[in-house]
Length: 56
Image 1 (tube, rainbow, N blue to C red):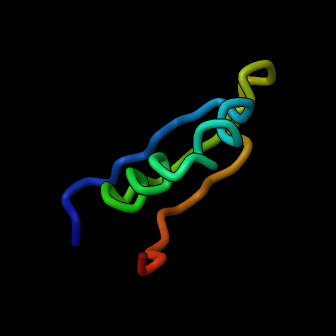
Image 2 (spheres, rainbow, N blue to C red):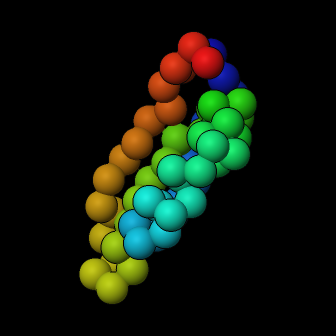
């Protein structure tokens, strides 16, 4: 069991631009990062995206 879990908080408007890039996908996979999307204007969490092992 890990001692801590890393959550990366990202504004929802940046998610599609950044995390569709191959380098971002590689970093998320390598560091097992969980992502939390939030909507800045409403100040709410929009979506939780847990890390999943894709086997790549």
